[in-house]
Image (cartoon, rainbow, N blue to C red; front, side):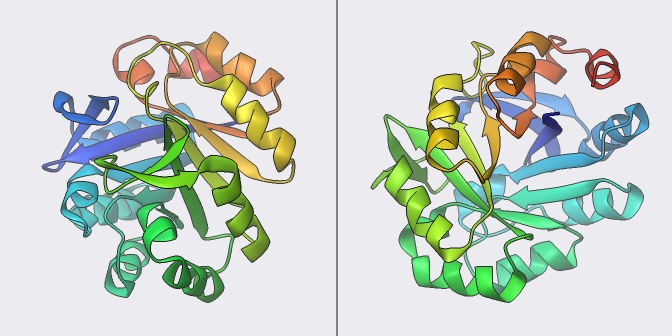
Length: 238
């Protein structure tokens, strides 16, 4: 059974969604805590939070929103966006995150990423692999690195990473369907990874297709907020 992970992206303390990571294509959907409570009341147990202000600013900005959600719900939260230093990652865990998603640091400071992986353990670290034109993107998707996806993953699989969040940026926020072929390629290369697919989910059928393809988990956001996915219907089918 595929793991279902609703997403909340935060700018200025509010729940938002971008299109293809473009901060100029922003839609505001309301209060993050209210949204998290709604997810929990329906029966969801996991939540993916992205601090978009943090990703842009290169340090955590919305830790208090994270703290509020983890204090006032029982959701298991993974948190990413702007985690660049020891202080940032410590802030995220102190604010209640069960896991953190690390992307840019894995590209720009692999030794620091390895130290965090050893310090906090692979069960608490998710490798963020955000892909555009076949290359890993960093710093809030504002820059493309020279790292290709599969070799990048291999380096961290060798270090012991178990959880990977892979976003196909060209799909993100478009409601045009996920990059299922890309995720199948990753699973074929690394069948033991807990791969979390992200980007483009537009319907329950998309999630069913990812499950049929053997993808372990899926993050989805805009399809919820735009009414394309009925959360009660989805969870009751699983």
